[in-house]
Image 1: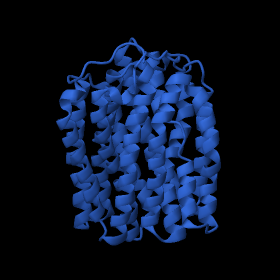
Image 2 (image 1 turned 90 degrees about the horizontal axis):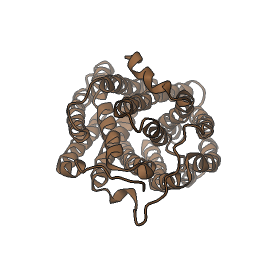
Image 3 (image 1 turned 30 degrees about the vertical axis):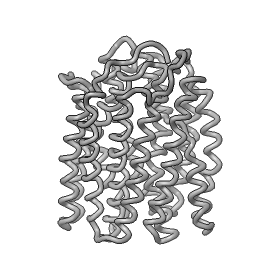
Image 4 (image 1 turned 60 degrees about the vertical axis):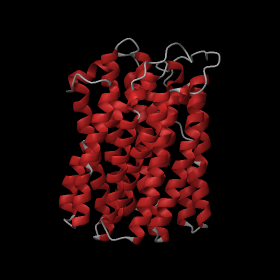
Length: 402
């Protein structure tokens, strides 16, 4: 397996930007859990924790396409450095506001203001697309590897966040996330030799959403994001209801572990379907597998059965994400790729925020395990959206610079 992936690192500088981006992405995977635990501990409210997290994610989702368009126009490093520095101050202020009992509105303001961080995952994928623009097989391997890295972050991040928040102090997870975010973002921007060159805009080219296929992918990824957001909050609350809150990070890590392994394996299989066909198959698998945590949660089977169900359910997410993000590269030219990635990831973040808010409200007012209806329903909705727009996802790739 690893020998197959080794070939993509033959490009000079590939290892450097991958490691730098990994730090920043690890911080992103820590933020949600750290914020939920911090606010739930200090303010004794999962509803407030979910609402604050949702506000920050929505703000980031609104700003990310603009940042993506700026990256396409001015280059990755010229946009990433100032955005990291601007976000650092409110990001660092958030744990201070929580610790020193500042008014609740300050939590919303700080989280929202810190959400201008660059999309390192999208920029990394744009670098792979540029480095292997003439090698589709290498691009496919790189996309699978990137998704595996995302899942690795979401496997290690929640565990690290829970460990820091429960063994040190409630704000420790978010404090470490701030440091990793700044270090990783600035180090990634410093890797100039692998940065894609800026493409001249085509007259009247318009934005990435002019692609009809992207207008299908965005709502599908909103529903997919709701799977992740509701699963995170529901799992934390469910473990807490059983007096096992420190185990919540491990449960979330199991879902990421299942996704990471399936993503690596998916990259090694030569595809027989188109990216659109692979996306539908991934959505169907994800919707079916998420019935397992639902069954374990509502039946009160306990954390052991839930852990197994979450591990298996996670195997459906990486192939779905890989197929969707590969499809973006098929639908858009290089000059719109950062914006297109940002738009779709923004949809994912909107879904995460909605899922977090709904998950927090259900956890606050319903019996433990009820919240697992949310990720199962969101996955089914994502599948329906993809099926409804399947014809548009098969549109030919745009050509020329944008």
